[in-house]
Length: 209
Image (tube, rainbow, N blue to C red):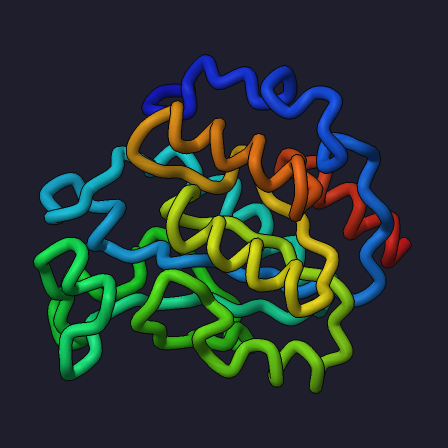
């Protein structure tokens, strides 16, 4: 593996924390794929992360959820009409009609996936909670970018809304290893089960075997 995840011993980093325990079997989970857009994933993009390495794992999760017929949500961030807190903090905008706002074409989403537009870090700033409750979901699996901003916020929001949270250590990415690992540790301490993609797929298969 190359890029910012290379050499990241995330299992050792979360050792002993509650989120390193064997996770419970999710009964009706939903997958949330956060902001896998050209803006972060194309080499010439303004906010390029060098995070292409997680694309195969994100796709693996998408395929597994589609096969199991569990709900899939994907978010797409862009700026609102008037500057919000993100625009004010970063002093930049991502317009909705900008090509950088498009979802990365290397990722294949099933037809039933729900694409949610959002203007803030957290996915629960959309109507996802109502959609999850309507679908009877008990848990969410979070993957995407950036680990310590939109993905972490989404995981914390989900926890506070009463969902079991599964955070994919090898299907989330951000700009530095330190930010990635510190988020995994914080989430494993108080919010989420932190595990790898293949572990999650096995859990899904166990619930549908």
